Image (cartoon, rainbow, N blue to C red):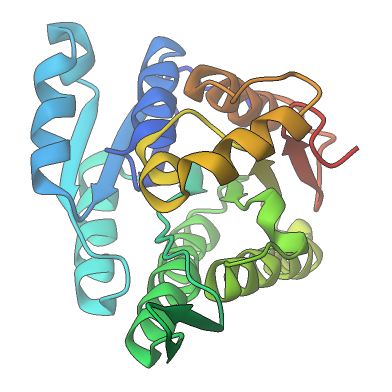
Length: 254
């Protein structure tokens, strides 16, 4: 798919990978609907754009784990653009804690609230948004593209019970949806970033663990958000890439 004048929705579009991808999409000529629950982040993104880019972007302050908000925003974008050509499921919550841990001699358990919040955002949200977008694509006979942003943590990662579970599930959904939707002309694929230079790993991982993971990466550094955005654009433009999840991790999982 060539992106010029295509209508693309991205969730989590105000974050590190999200905002970089938004700019790359705009530079490719796409019209972009940005979904994010972070209103301040949306405002900062808007202020950073050129006037020409502002004419091709639509902002939605949406919490994707709330179905009514999702449906309303997608309907609004569809009414304005008349078609939806692509979706990037990117929004995610990362709450790093072990299943059972100790703090100052006391035992604690992974909280039910953190478990439910992670699954709600990282799994329910993907389902809500994808279901509604696919409906629009199908009604318009649009040969669209859906890209699920996963993580190398999908293979399992210490201290990431809920996050790893959701990312593994997302990989399974990528294959399932690719199988189900290909006959409609809708192509589904995924991308799994490694350690990327954003606020998420810096705020959720302690410095020693982050340093250890970087040292284990053959590239000896974190990935940049532009590199991940470039991988997303590759998936859009390569029409032979179906049902697979591209691991873009600097060789960490070689």
